[in-house]
Image 1: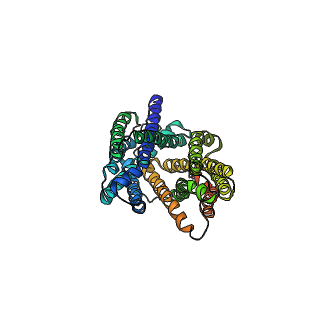
Image 2: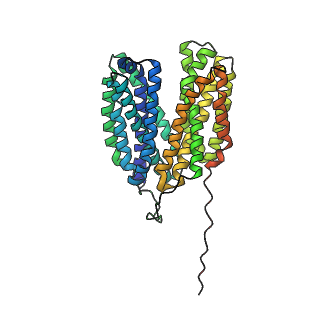
Length: 395
């Protein structure tokens, strides 16, 4: 049993890293794909909405399937779908084929995102201690590997289609090889658990929607950092292009390191404290970055922002999955789905705000989201179980 659990944990790391690698390889090759399809930056921006729409649709569709058939079945199929779809943008030759390719890639990414997180909840339940954040760190590491590998293949003159085709074949192989190690649907249920309990479909509880709303706010902050941190240093502090790139690097590095350490912090302090203090640290860091007139302090602020956010989303997904193990897939899909919308909405919201405010002051929006998340962190506390009923039988 313990050996199966360790194998399941390792397989989960593999799928998270694979997801990060696949999406990272797409990002690295965006310029080449854009050139091959013959589209402008503006058109690409609209097409990226299809990527988001596909991901959201995939997340909502795969949640019930994961609950019904188990993550052991759904995760490898989702990984295979995402791997096969990653080559499609590299083959696109016009706006229509690229749009269809991004929609398919989004669906594959959404399916893999929810199903692997649902399996991570299974693994965490078996370990009886926090392990979720480390899986999300594996996703980040996969993205770093994609940046390194993509840079190398581009320097060798490989086309996006060739590189993404090789990645697709590798992803299909990894999806198949890691599948046997995944946990069975009921592999870690306690022996006294009544698996035949009623599974009537219920409305998504209010607590799940609250967790989803917090995920939207936290991932909105992540989206802002992804798209605007470099521009902040470049435009507001007049940094060189090379120095400005360090802003996102500081954020991403601090987030990865923070995720590697967050599970220990959660085990020691509890998920409520990790979300409350993490969001607070993120708010302080982004405020410092936004108001700083000095580049070193701004870089430190972006790093602080990443460190603070690093453990927040894993706590929300973990709480959603553990709230009802029979509906873990659906609950995770709600939280992940709204969170993904937040990641798309964050960068989109900053743009219009820059017409009425300086760029650095628009960051008060994600700061406010962090403050709200810190104030509402108590929602991570599990509901108190109902008092046991005392059955008295008249003799």
